[in-house]
Image 1 (cartoon, helix red, strand yellow):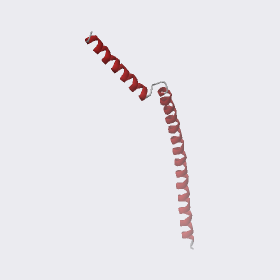
Image 2: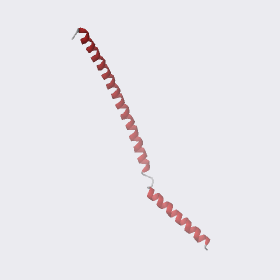
Image 3: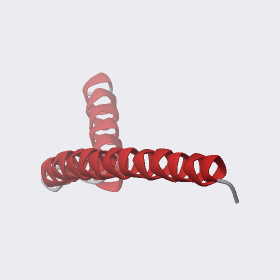
Image 4: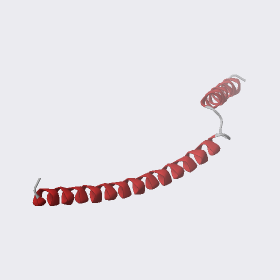
Length: 82
């Protein structure tokens, strides 16, 4: 190999090493950003689940709605047939 070829190869290696360092820096920054976003998402999810614990389930809601409907209908029936 000639001196210029060796010099060219060294330049290419230096360029690739620089690109690798830049990519590693970007990857580290992205990992930190994703970690922060995941932590915020986890906190919001915990907040939503915490507020949902005190609420009735759909079964209870439908049961209460059905009972109120029946009581209202029976009350109207009794009042109109007295």
